Image (cartoon, rainbow, N blue to C red; front, side):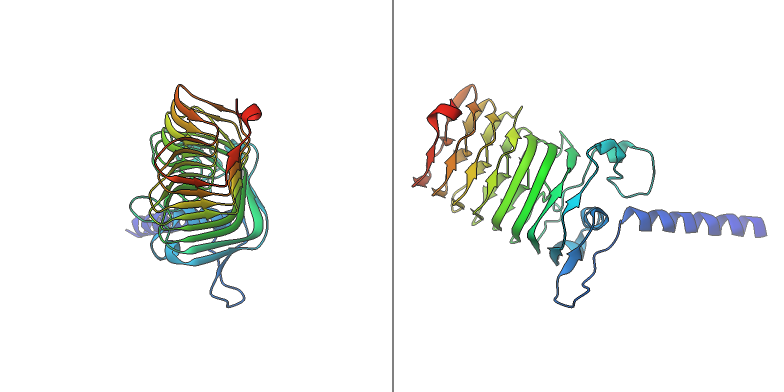
Length: 285
C-alpha cells in the first residue's frame, strides 16, 4: 500500500513538472508599468503555449531574441525534452488562433525576433501572431523566418482583424495556400498596416499572394509601406498585395513577381483604391 502511494505521488510530481516545463517561462511586469516583459525565447514559448487571459495582456519586448539557426535544436513546445518529437517538428505555435484570438498589445521597442520556424501546412492562421483581433503590434522585426502554413499565412501575422500593425518588418521565407504575404496573410476589417516592410520571399503559394500582404480587404488600409522580397504564386499575385479591396497609399514594391494568372507588379487585382504608389517595372519583371 505504501509503495503504491509513493508511486502515485511520484507520478503526480512528474505530471506537474511536465506541465510547468511545457509553459516555458512566464513573463512578468518588473517595473509595474502594466506591460509583461518579453526578455527571452522562453518567454515567447510560454506566450505561444498559454492563451486565455495571457492573450489579452499587454507585452513589451526588452531585447533582441534569437532562436537556434538549426530548428531541430529548439524545444518549440517547451516540454523540456531533448528529443525533437512530433510537436517540436511543427515548430512555433502561433500566438492567436480561430478559437482564441490575441486581443492585447505587443510593443517591440525596436527589437527583433530571429530564427522562428513553423511547419504546419494543414493549419490556418500562421505567423508569429496567428490571429490578432482588436490588437496592436508595433516596433517589431521578425528576421530569418521559415514559415509554412495553409490559409492566412504571413511572416508576422496570419490574419489581422481590426488590428493596428505599425513600424514592423519581416525577412526570411513564407509559403502557404490562400492569403499569403511576407508580412501579413490577410488584412481584414478596419485593420491598419503602416510604416512597415518585408524582404521575405513568398514562395509555393496558390492564390491571393503578396510580397507584403496576401489580401487587403474592404475598410482595411496599408500606408507608407513596401516590399523588396520575391513573390511567386499561381493566381492573384502582386508585388505588394495579391488582391486589394481596401486602401493602399504611399507604398511601393521592387521584388520580382511571377504567377500563372492575374499578376501585377504592385497589386494582382481588386476593386480597392491605390494612391501615390508604384512598382519597379525592371526588378518586378
